[in-house]
Length: 134
Image 1 (cartoon, one colour):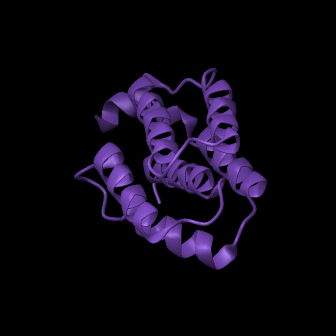
Image 2 (cartoon, rainbow, N blue to C red; image 1 turned 90 degrees about the vertical axis):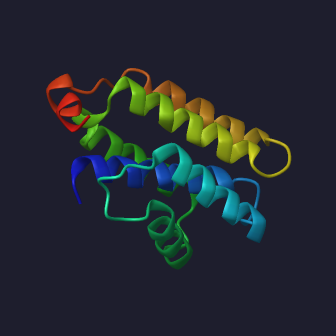
């Protein structure tokens, strides 16, 4: 996968972590998850479906939230040269929408999102890379 695809995969994994913070994903919550990811992260140049990949891997591997979160942040930092300010904003919006998609936002979901905001804030991409992709 390309660095930009890796960033999208990482945010998909973080979104899955938020979605499962309050337990397992309900069937209707799964569809909302798919719709949010598709709407917020859709790009005509990608030849992959982030949500399908995320669900297959996460459900198969059964990673705990901390391991999943740490892996995703590692990927974001590793591919951060493609992380534009707009993409950072989109990632935050995705996580917030996922948390609100099913019932009340729990403390666990809120903590994951706040942690993410704090950790992603100082990461700045390189315009040489991310403007080339726009």
